[in-house]
Length: 349
Image 1: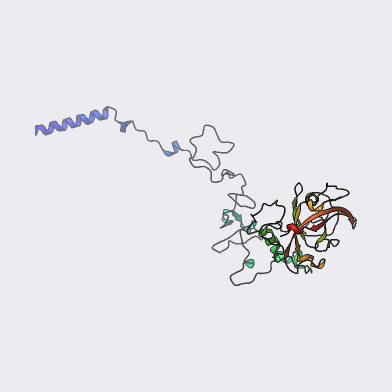
Image 2: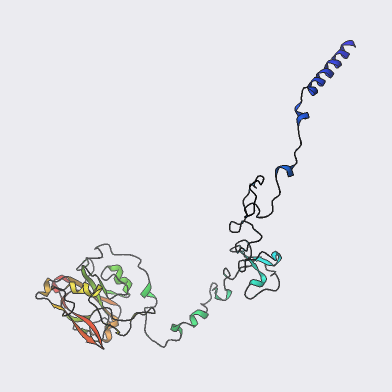
């Protein structure tokens, strides 16, 4: 009994010493959250009137990086994408594609009520259901195509059924693109349906242009397609009018001769094939035309109305020719450059 009382007195004295010795619980001071963090107004932390002695800034940045969540600034990124005014949030629609907001009264035409559809798309993201072609349906007439000049044109000209602008699926690597002379493996008389096939074979690489060459190296190939009515084709010999002098603005492939041709670009390239010095004014005539650079010649069925030597359909490779001379003449008030080509039989196989 005496021992138990002694233990109680000892425990009470120890507790009193701990309390009087400065326990950490007695030194604790309760601090409220409002004393540590101050509730900021929207946009006040980044605004021009923000004080330098402000408390700790918020850990998360503004949701809009354009206006910094400033309610006084109009913003088309976080509010209406049309007017940018921060008002009437209950009348704003969010596009399910671009996630931009639009006021119902800012749309064209404006909406009087909120649509009940589950998905809504803005005018920029919406697809016209009338132009969507489902499986098994035919192509629908487009209003845009109906207004094009091709829809009301009375021309019966065949533009190749889209093959005039198709891309190559392969490229000739047997010889380089600046190769003069025949292409190994392609015999004289080879026929192709489309010009793109001629390009893939390496005989004449351009899809549309009639002359392939470089103004500092010479011409590599050309196509006889009856482009000028003054051209003469006698089979083993032909006269060929150069390029240029036509206004091809408006995506035209051909037009009437409206200005003078110049001995530049492809015309100069073809003149370099002639074994004579280039003369821009008087032309040139080779003393030994067989010593000139060879040029591959392709005849197109488009020249059938001017020449009986053109194929009835497609494009035909007719071998190697040499340029003998060149001269200039006036046609309908415009100067044209003409070249004479002779078949070079020894190098055509």
